[in-house]
Each structure stands twice: as structure tokens, then as C-alpha cells.
Length: 601
Image (cartoon, rainbow, N blue to C red; front, side):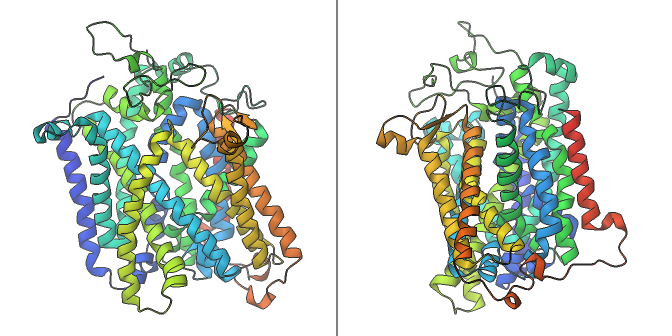
């Protein structure tokens, strides 16, 4: 596979970069207080917040990662949307947003301080800060991988006399500088309006790709015939871990993904919740995740389907004198095998090639899009990376400044000082994200790495929030020790378990390796390992929080008004037609998700 980018392709990308930086420059003069920089002054309309809510999640994990999972696991990957994300988005809009927005907390960790105490907030803030820079680093890694594979900087490197192996490093630095530029200048407002732009770019760039791919493989029927059996169904084979494409049976899927991981992410992750908290009213904040749920339902057709199409195409055959590489010939469809540092094809412990699933989307773009359209498709891909990085950086600088720096390091400084610290945190978070990008190189599917991070941080946090919001007896000590135990449980599970074909290290088994050299538990793949890590983390946190709460003193009920469901007056929206009420809106999107599960069962 070769790459030929014409001047028009480069021009489209340059215009995009200039535009996003221009938004940052245009908004710079409005960033006068910390509320302007971190919270957009709580002035964002519902539809803008809704598109930003979904776009903040449209980073590398949504585009590169979902296409990779589509190629690896098939349409069952849609469970992340139709079983997990949609019900969770309806739940946070209807039940949880009144507490986030109504409490006037500036962040999710700050809500934990109001509901529990300072130490619970501190633990969550530190864990969340680490998770955001890791997620941002994954987006950087994916972008650098894309630029390296497309040879965008080849001519520049040759003219400077620099080795081609530096392209990956240069790409990470360039991506970091551009994202840093517009977030540093315009804060959360700049990130939100850029995310709306990026949303429309992603749709415009990937819709033609899917149409061309489907037409080439003979439509839906042709795709069904060319991919492995069951790849176009979401529920087929789910009764057993041995036959499930995800390597996990119905209980593990519903509990691990459908409940713990999905609700943990969409209901407690400040990265997305921050967009709703920037809305201009309580009503707008509640409708924000519900508006986002509508396009979220159709995104599997834009980001997962290309992965299936990629594996349905003929695998290139290595013939002497052709440009087909050994990695391509040992791949699957147009997804090549992964190479090690010496340039040889990587093999797993069973002697099978380790496929580079993250190449699914880049190779699809190169395979189908002509000059001009390729520029648009690549810009859409780059836009997704930008939104992912910016979303994590804005969440990081807010949590760092309010929940760590102001809370523990310098509590009585002026607003001007915290605004300065926000800018510094933006720079600092970007530098740490660069380091995280190199950790991501150890995985052949970045979605697996992200799910591992979410299992360790979001899964136990979900138990803390559910008990905190819906059980008034939950105490501060119960929440803190429960959260600590849940995170520890996820880490221990990772240390004693290992996906089949993997070696002990970043993919798990490190405790077992030190103890006996053999993992205690083995899973069919990384996805199944992460689902069960989430289940253990959530369960341990849930149980420990309840037990400790029964032995410690609870808050007074009058202190919990507005923070706990049973002690907070219900919101009644008068003079609003039924279909605009969050409850009715939520029911509609959940029914639509159920219908999609039935259609593609």
C-alpha cells in the first residue's frame, strides 16, 4: 500500500490547523477569570454542549480504537454504544446531572468533597488526573502512528537529513504543540467550539469512506459473506466465553461493560461531564447527554464498520518484485502484522502474527479515498485526535488547579493566580501526555489499554457515586476506603491475570510472574480481562463502602440536601411539552438503542 498526498490534501489540513488555532486566538480576550477559562462562564447552549459532550469522547479511542475493535471483535463492539453508552447517557441526564449542576461544584472531585470529605476528593482527583494524561497520551500516540504510516513528514525529514525513525517523535511534538496552543489561549470555550467543528468534520470525512467500502465489498450481504462467522451480529455466541467474539459471556458483558464500565465512564468521568456543567441552565445541562445520545447511536456505522470492511478485503500476497511487505502478507485483509524494533514480524506465544489492528482506519483511508477526499478524511481523523487530546487536557487543568493545587498546595491565592496556574497546568499536562504516548506503544489495540485505565479508575468510582447519590447512610470514611479498595482490587486483578498469547508486563500477570511465573487467571483476550477487572473493582468498592459506612458516623441529613436523591426536591419543568422533558427524551433514546440490538442481534 502506498501513499500519495497531493497539495490539495495538505492544504485542507493546513486550513484546519489554522482555523482551530484561530478560534483560540479569537477567544483569548474573553479569558479574564478562572471561571471563564475552566467553566466557559456556564454560558454554553444545550445543543453546543451536547455535540461537545460526544466530541470530547471522539478521540483516538472512538475512531482508531473502535475501528481496531471492529476488525478484532466484529460488530459486537457496538455493545460499547447500544448496551453501554446510550443507557448510561440517559441515566446521567435524568438522575445525576441535577446533583452535578445543582451543587454548583466546579468538577466531579469537588462534588465528592461536598458529599463526603476532602480525602475522598483528593484520591479521586489524583486518580483522574493520571487517567486524563494517559488518555491524552493515547490520542497522541494514535496521531503519530497515523502520520508515520502516511509518510506525511517523509519529504521534510529527507530534506533535513534526519532519520525516518524520528517521524513518530516529531509527530507527537507537533500534535502536542497545536493542541496546547488553542487550549492555552481559549480554555474550555475554545475546546468546546473546536469539538463542535470536529464533530461535523468527522461525519463528513467518514461517511464517504463507509459508502465506498460497502459498495466495494458488495453491500451488507457481501460483507456478511467475507468476514468471519458471527462478525456482523452483536449477540451471536454470547452464551459462552469460548464462542463470544469478545471472549466474555453475557453476564460479564452486561455487568462489566453494560453497567460498570459504561456507567462509570459516562456518569462520573469529568472529561464529558464538564461539557454539561458548562451549559447555560439546569434544563440545558440535563438535555446535554440526551442530545449527545442521538448521534452516538449511529456512530458504530461510521467507526466500527470500517474495521469489518478492512478484514473483509483480500490479504495482499508477497511476490518477489512487488511492493507488498512481509507484514502486509502476514496480515489479515488490509491490516498488517505488527513489527518489532528489528523490523521482524511480531509473534505471540502461540507463534501467530500479532496484528496491528490500529492500522484499520488509516489503511482504509489510503485504500479508498482519492486526492482531495483523502485530505478531508485525514483532516477528520486528525480532528478526532485533537478533540480527544483537548478534552483530556481541559479536564486535567481544571482538576489539577481546583482539586489538587487550590485544595492542598495554595488554598488562599487570588483568582488571577489560579488563572495563571490553569495555563501552567495546560502546559504541564501536555508534557506528561507525551510521556504517556510512549507507554501506549506496547498495545496493538488502544481500546484495550483505555478499557484497562477505565477499569482501574471509573469502575470503583461508579460505586462511590451511586451510593453517595442514592444512599444517605454512605459515610465519608466508607467512600474513601471503598474507593481505595476498588482501585487496589483492579490493580491486583491485573497483576494476577493475563490475556492468552501475552507475556507478563503491561498487559498483566506481573504479580504472578514475580511469585510463580504463571498467571492465576487467563482470559481469551484483553477485552475480557478488562471487563472482569471492572466487575471486581466495582464490587469490592461497593461492598467495602457499605461495610465501613455501617461502622462510621454519617453526615447530618440537613447537610446533604441537594446532594442525595431522597433528600432533594424533584425538578418539575412547567410549560414544557412532553417530548422536550429529559425523562421522555431518555425513554426514547433507550428504546431506540434496544431496537438496534434487536435488528443486529
